[in-house]
Length: 353
View (cartoon, rainbow, N blue to C red):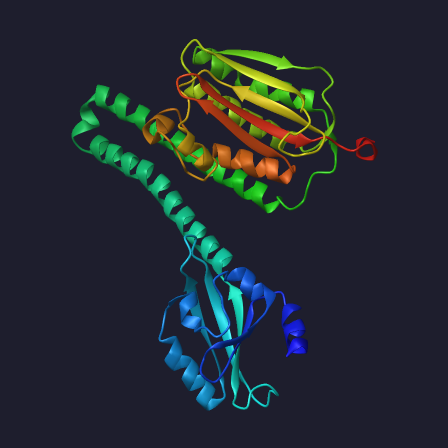
């Protein structure tokens, strides 16, 4: 029995052995870790909600000395889904009757991925359908009662231009997100002058800030530590953060860009540099902050669309930083404003060369 237990403990996935009365006779460490309430001598049915009559299925499998599979969903707050492979084993020394060996495969990550993909497709469809529906209505009006009305024509053409721009931005952001995700596992290896990258990003949004009546204040120390990165990607991430600050801060307010070496105890727990963008907006409720980097998540949907937002900007920032082995932190105070900070690891001396 001890040797069997050692062998089971050497298997990385949960494994259980049921006796001929369908009680748990043996289980490995992975099984006890996955199911804290597990106890030998108990019925498997106490582990979770089953999508079929497990007892009948197991009894049939045992009687036929065959194999089968089934799915179980745990009763925990965060429900996990397991695919269980069942096989009959005979002639074990400790058991006179045939027994069942159950191997558990955690399907939760796959289920989450499928749900995310489904939500993503639904969101994209909705985001594209809305402007298309609007454009279709404008065209129908211009072809009908409004074709001889110059004022209506001018108004609807302006609205159509706005909707086309919105779709163009959406497609552009989708392509950017797709490219970044495709390269996420390959960290950049070339040294990057971060000062030049920040300057490029600030220059790109200066005209927009001026148009919206906002002021940019740069507090970037000269000769920032060298990082490994791709300039266009990091510039895109900073531009997204700056555009958000410009769009959602108060008129006449100041957006402050700060960059310097990160102190010890920073979120990366290693030598790092940070670039922060602080606005003077309305602030973000604490409950909303964890979801800000989700695709298509918006706190104020109508305002986001009015300023041309696609709901993908912060998702792109997040994935760009993941590729650069960095991290984004968000701090906000209602009525005061928000600070978005990107942390990037400093290149090691041999990497700088």
